[in-house]
Amino acid sequence: MNLKYSQFNLVDEIKSGVYSIYNTKSRFHLILNLTQYSSHAALLQHSELIPQLPKSVVDKLFDKGFIVSVEVNELSDLKRKSFAARVNEDHGLVLTILPTLECNFRCVYCFEDVLQHKNDRVMTAETQDNLVKFVTEKLSQGIKGALYVKWFGGEPLLALDTMLSVSEKLKVVAKQFGNQYISAMLSNGYLLDRLTKQHIDDLSVFAIQVCLDGPEEIHNKRRPHRGGGNSFQTIIENLKNLTNIVERIYIRINTDKTNAASIAFLLRFLKEQGLLERCKYDIGYIDTETGRYTLGQTCSALLKEADIRSIYKSISQGLHALNLENIERAEYPKLLKFACDAQIKEAFIVDPTGNVFRCLNDATIPSRAMFNLNSGHEINSKRGERFLTLDPYNIEECCACAYLPICHGGCPAKLIDLGEGQGNCWPNHYVFRDKLIKYAKRKVG
Ligand code: SF4
Ligand code: SF4
View 1 (cartoon, helix red, strand yellow):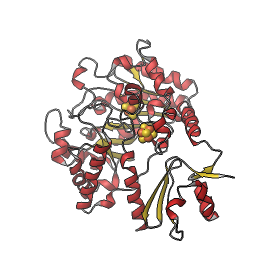
View 2: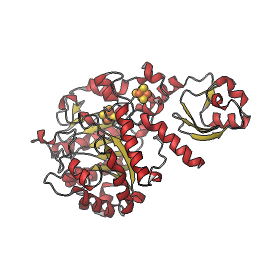
View 3: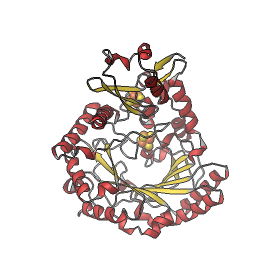
């Protein structure tokens, strides 16, 4: 069989003759010692040199997707799998429910202008009933996999009663059709003390994500409580109590150029409080100037490469200065076949008025809803379709990019609204290689 190197390899020399090789499609990361070869610099780059490697190395590289048959068209394979995954009902039914748009915080970069939604901030009984009917109809069509509910807001815990009553009904429906029921929650963390172990069980919550934007003073300025006061201390106390009753807690740290230098101090504090062992943290890059396209687990900012590099550098330097570099764990991206949940056919975002969307950032713009659960009327079904049909695998720049299997063309909404090359790239890719090299160097010591 004639072989070639995968177009999705990232190869870096980490010390003379020792290479880090990572494949963005298979997600394998290997360290190879090629010091015995005089021409080692070219060996992992040029397919015609593959025969010079020992068979055991070639077999290993083939097995892990670094080497493929020349017959394989990796791009069309990626595209085929992505389009198939978008409509694969094994994902189950994924619902992001906004039980309220009310919020007790006034974050400086919030993309939901909570003050604009004066009359329709809390989910009505009519919407709750129609949501349950919608789920019943969907599951009755034979969707396999779990009914997966993500609670979002506003601050969802301001509508805890709604969450509990909707959950109770959805669990009955899931049971009726033999689907597992699981849920997760994004919360600002202030009201987590309202959640008892019984609530966690009733909601079947396995994961909660909370945002912290820096040490106390900085967090309190960026994510102030509506009534002022110290939101940071309350969140920290709540997290400490919560780690005993929730399976997974994620701390999302939203960074931009103004708070990047403080992140190492936040991480040191979390470590001292014992929270780093019990929670996972993740750094998000946000653009505080536009406030759009910034929220949600995979949503990215409209930041430029230079900004992201400078934020990452600032964080790394901070960790180095505090002798905390090992806090940065080797975290490889998840294996996803599309850019975000907005591209899953059976994934829906439901706002308190019953409007149903594909993208989280659309969720406060009624004209972007696909349809309304209460009226049954279509609103903008074409926009919903665009997320499913979007094809980044024919964009020249993406086709030549080694990050395509992770990024899949980046935020679909940006591609739809702004067009190609307008900041849709997966922001982490600007610093991912630096991270890989760091992890690899740590491995070889
Ligand atoms: S389309 Fe973009 S903005 Fe919308 S949910 Fe996905 S990543 Fe976020
Ligand atoms: S959007 Fe950017 S990072 Fe993503 S595949 Fe295309 S060029 Fe690469």
